[in-house]
Length: 184
Image 1 (cartoon, rainbow, N blue to C red):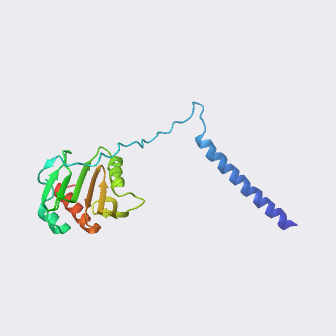
Image 2 (spheres, rainbow, N blue to C red):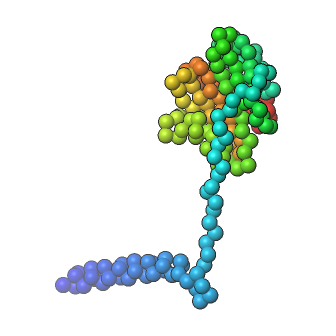
Image 3 (cartoon, one colour):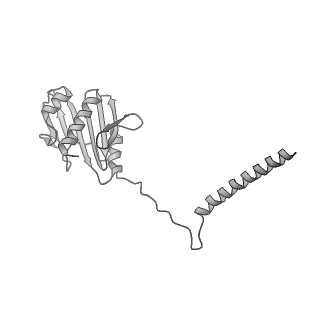
């Protein structure tokens, strides 16, 4: 039975290695003679995204012109309105019949988590397709019941474009234009 003895010795040695490894892992987190080692905790609390923007008055969009919107979205712009948000107001583009055809919201937040929360509210991770633009922008895109949305963020800045057309390529092109115009 020499083979059985070698097998038992090998199994016993493996068990000792396993137990020694577990003991070493336990010792790392245990108290030292001067007390427990405090681990720094990262803050995961972010400000909630701002409320949905609302028009504060008529006026041109400072970073997106009507001609580009008409050409890209395929509908004539009857009027535009802007929100009171600073530093970049949300822009609202309306069709000739008064219906909203396009909305653009730009958020400059103090932290990336707030910008991401705005993007996730507009294009939830669970339901949207991934969206990216050059320069490190990421987020989501998806058709909606009334059109499409393209929402991206980079750092603490978010850009959300919602349109009344079902193609995400249109709102994607508008988001690119907004980023270029604002130098983001």
